[in-house]
Amino acid sequence: MTRILLGISASAAVAKAADLASKLRQAGHEVNVVLTPNAAELISAQLLEALTGRPVHVSEYGPNRRCAMDHIELARKTELLLIAPATADLIGQLAAGLAPNLLTTLSLAIPADVPRVLIPAMNPFMYAQPAVQRNLKTLASDGWRVEEPATGEVACGDEGPGRFLETHEVLRRLGDLLGA
Image 1 (spheres, rainbow, N blue to C red):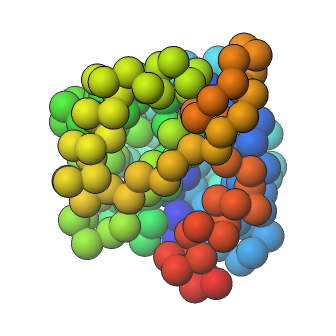
Image 2: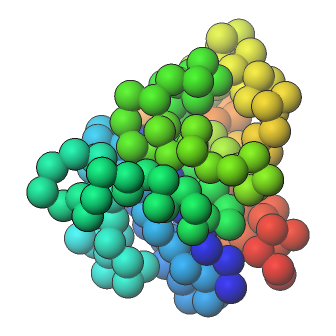
Image 3: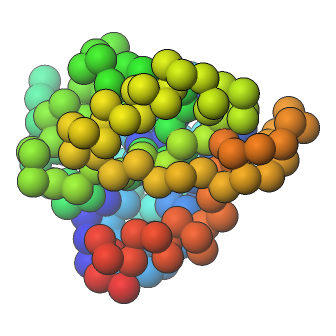
């Protein structure tokens, strides 16, 4: 069993992220979900809690926090940081070392020896932008494992690289980190 911190950013692919969370739990992994505030507008934390059997985290602030150092506690318990989907915005924040939300703060608090994986998902024109590609290269050089997205039709109808990977493909690609 791997203790996975699944970060979900605001993308049309959040539905696939829910399936991924469910399949990871079914495979015997402990899955702690952290939503960006914008992702929490697209998918219910309650649904993800039902799928993972664990509390879902959105903010470091407010009545749902247990202590002032929730982000440190979560980081210490993480054996794999998986951000899926990773949007262009989140990728830029991570590449710049910014921490405007709980997910980015946690990403900075994860010990260097914990594997960190990004599964990008965005419009193909966004994915092809030099700034996005530069940010992905920066993260890869910082030790992040960046998985190439699928090629195909995305939610807006455009086609090309940027489509979120199917759940079985994510699990296949992460087999070495999940003990599969």
